[in-house]
Length: 444
Picture: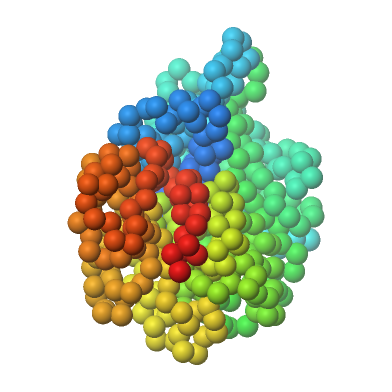
């Protein structure tokens, strides 16, 4: 994104909405691919929040192909989350569902996405409002209301702007206003749309914004190591382009975690020396390490969000495993960097890795492990789909759906490598930490 152009336009706080500023990023820009992956992670967390109780049971009864389609995009996941919501009643409840459906079409990005707290002159923020789906003709917006929501929940009105239907033609529009000068912490920008003839609150969507105390001085104090450089690069993407990472952690939490790590801490969020751009979780006294692998479009660091992230951290604590979330495109380089420097790194990095490959991430495993003879001894767990167990000669834990697991009972299974998995959202991975609860400890 052309940050200079956006900030120059932002100085004109009274200016009208700018459709041209919303066009400064090409759809082919690789930074937007990262943004789409983060949107998917955010939508997945919201979906999983509703995948409980009766709603979860209803979802599990749907055909597997329908469940898989819901995972193809952030928009599809958001639609599935709305579908899992409690049935709407008459009047206000039904209106709230309509408003939520409209809000789900909005893709918000705050440029910048964070700033130093306590500045006398806070930066101008461009709130980019793009559309994930076509806006329905019957929903006629007449005004946009942007508000700041402070860490304590208090609300501060930032801007109101009149709208026309043209503002909701692709790609969208920008709103400009100043960042708050309030306390450090995670703030939120809430955009509420006022619709023509609307009797109550219109659709509303939120995007995070972090104010960090002593940001510049703390970044300078981190030094020039690979982990510090990686964190600076991540925060710079948020400051300059508004790109928020898939893991969703506040900037303060990331910064404090790296400060503890560099001071000798041995637990919490962790950036490994051979994969500093990838986020890991290290329980105290970890004795093994592993890689949780995902496809790039599904955001590796997004695995640490919500219920799924909590379950993975609990698994790490039980098993004593430092787990690093990486993407398939980074995996080979990560393993090469580890192999080059492993003798100089302390436990657990000196041992061989565990490989956890949910969903489609395991498709390239045979080629990966056969590339070097030493890798044939590595421990892995992957998900295999289809009606029959895979013809995989490598040892390891393989999760199979009911039909494939039943078929596996008809053939030898040395080492008990096949394990049953229910017909659930394995691609969404929520059940994985439960399905491998006794692994790898039980296998040693």
